[in-house]
Length: 304
Image (tube, rainbow, N blue to C red; front, side):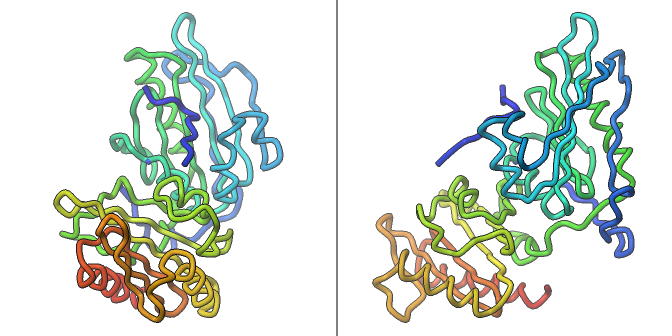
């Protein structure tokens, strides 16, 4: 059973709205409401609020995940029904739909539940995002009734959020189609700490990731091989150039002016820059293939 606040150290069905509907609306438009009662589970009358400073009082050890996505706060309600397992609902205000998607994507692993703009349900835990909200609903015990009520509470919250929001445009740089992209393994983030938790690169922040950079990590199945493609967008071309040089000095110091290297596992890593983007492929089967992955991503940058 998957625990709702598991923090692992060193998770797609998207509704793409029209351009007008996709614009981020005001705070009132984006507000999510909790139901008072669903399927006999009644709200206990308390609503707890936590912000960036107090989040660790609620989820000590896991708050870093939300902080890394620049969240504003979370509201929590608890539902009870006799001897049935209690159900807890959490609504996180992530500020933007991109970061709501990001925190959803980071731990995605279960089956789509058809709620919000993207969702998953497994082990009694429902996770979904819609607009600027990321929502988690979970039962503190097992049973078909509790599972059904968990989904119904989630649907009620999703229906209360009147507007949808765009997914990160950076996802469009990842080659897809017949490339073997494992969509559930696609992560969107800003922090090198989060990068290392999904694909370890270095202890230090050798790519200069920060709250203003955007990064997406795609995993591809190529036969028995797993290839990782990392795309990062910086605010300026000069920032991307500096980060690429820093990465090369730390990760591939032997290559000099070249941009590819064969690692100890006999796989190939290639890195490149186009405009304000850095593109890095890890685990390619040959030098030629590593360079092909970089070119494939470069061709998609022009669409942004």
